[in-house]
Image (cartoon, rainbow, N blue to C red):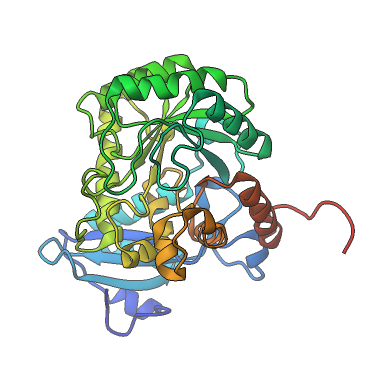
Length: 388
């Protein structure tokens, strides 16, 4: 990124006030940092992130001109400084900044009707023979139901049930086969104590699964992989997770390229949210997922994790899936996905610091324990129990 002269790092009010942008520039606002109750020793003027316990006192302003999509100016300012500068600019600049800050601060409905806690834990139930980390382990309905119940008992708020692998290079599964895999599991996990989510790209599977009791549709193609998916999701009344994937899983890892990975994904997800709203799915029932590992290099993934808070200014909860993924192995040398638990926990907790609201994980009990410690350190919950 290109920094405006004299304003990289902590921007001064004078540097910000002298900044001029064209009316065609796209402006983006990222909380930097997100502050938790334990972080705020001497609080200044701040936004409450999504009306919750986290606050935002300072932000990164990202500026991209349409004719130079890969050249992005970045500067930092307090919320007060940004508001003052935008008011002085007026017009499209004031509108863009106000819209972003309002999206950051507006209270949101608890996702999927769950209590307004943070984060939610989504446990993975793969009813597949070929998923990248546990393919075949829970491929029968009985095994998947037992596994899902164990995840719910371990503390999963949501169970994400999928019958088609979306690992890099995977082939599509016929709709009839996907239905054969997932429907008995959805029916068998009704009343398990967790909300049920269907992980699918197919409209027919969405419709059948939501009629059987799934209340979330989690689509790695953001409801555009099947031409009927958007209408099916809208008709179901389900909550929706829109994920970014660069192309289809079969080819997504073949030399992925972006002008600016975070801003390109932001624009894509903003467009998909708009499409959902036009189809009758309210923003309040949508979560977004940047799709770590789905058409991204290691460098792309790390940039997205560091800048995750940017997606909070879409006004939707942010789901993060890093569990056991290959980018962890590229950093650590661990070739077995089942050996990547420590890296998965480290990435998940970093994601919470950066703005994740929902963690999609394979290892629920371990994640629940790690999150409990994270919450205590952040001042979100007091420690329970005695002893050293």
